[in-house]
Length: 122
Length: 433
Image (cartoon, rainbow over the protein chains, first blue to last red):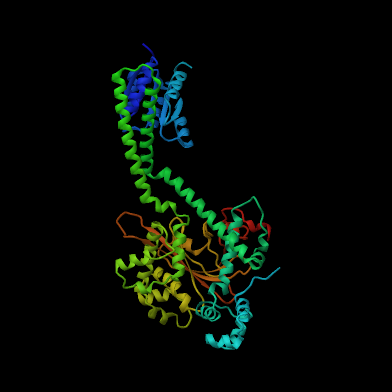
């Protein structure tokens, strides 16, 4: 069994695509699609990495990340943030919230794979 | 240094060019030759109806004769100079430049105006991308679809061996996402088409409204009995108004000025100002109308009814200038913040209190003005809801020298006043004395 990745994203076809490419690369993938209870899901699953979309129903990715960073157990958890906004201020917001990496949509499969590998093993 | 060309000198110049004798022109406009002589030697100030009559007799635009046009040009040149530190225009020779090369000076002023309009358009578009929730959501959804398509297509292209079940699923996803992307794109284009008018305009809506008001001299008495459809048609036919935003703003202003005309007819005002004395508070009291109505109405009718045109400026509670009727010698900035010492702004801190203050506008001519200001609530008064205010200031030029209660400027960048507590930024004029 490979290392665990939790994908929190509300677009089912993106979830399916990311799950497929990560699974093919040997990762064990779990998914979740709303922001309401995302913090609890992360705390229960304690994955090796979280891929977190910013625009989620119920709670933004920024808020979820801030909550994760305020807890000892998830303070250092690698989090790759995905957003459709690529402005400087969005990148700064992600950094302030504690993102390990920030990726702007649309991204390529190779970029996602490289980022995941680097964040977990690099 | 070339002296600033005065209205009288221009009249003389145009009269000579037209081959008219002084007495002939005087007779045509119904004044004595000696009075015209005084005007031509700049010993009598001129404006309003007489200026228009002389302009008509000389077959020229009144603005070609008035000092106001030149003052406005100089003010525009100073504004243009104020926005750059990269070059140092000879500010002290601005009037010489405008006098000797009015065409080039006008070009600079026009280019400056256009530049600011373009900056405004760019800022509006940037703001829109950032703050328009519908646009932001649409763009986000489209980028999400593009991401899904790119990722799925990448899988199909790059994965050598893929189970038929997965391949079929990804083909289906591609089909779904491409359809959603197409629908999203269509909706976005339709939305931008509908709203595009407001953002595509290269002039500020307020400038278009001001141009329209200038054409009609702020007078809409002919619309007093117009039906809503007739009023809409009138606004729709104004060539100066090229955007929906400008037409909406113009409709609001015209409705206001039309309502003023209903409350204060020309006959009523003529009785009050027949002696040439302007007393807004007395007019408001005699007819039982709001002072702001009197201020707006006096400014509107002054061009034809009074010896000198009167100016008007209006702002909202943020201090943003929303309506400007310039008057000679009282420079009203077009874009930058105005002088905080204007009674217009003092009125905002004393709502519903009528203010009158005699001020001197800084500058070489140091003209004096009586300023009448009042701020009044807008909209309907509601329980436990703080009202918003609009402030109005009528600007009455004073002919004679006399005491002044305050020195005021146009905007900080072109104001020479030192040690002003209201100063926001250094003056460009500090170095030229």
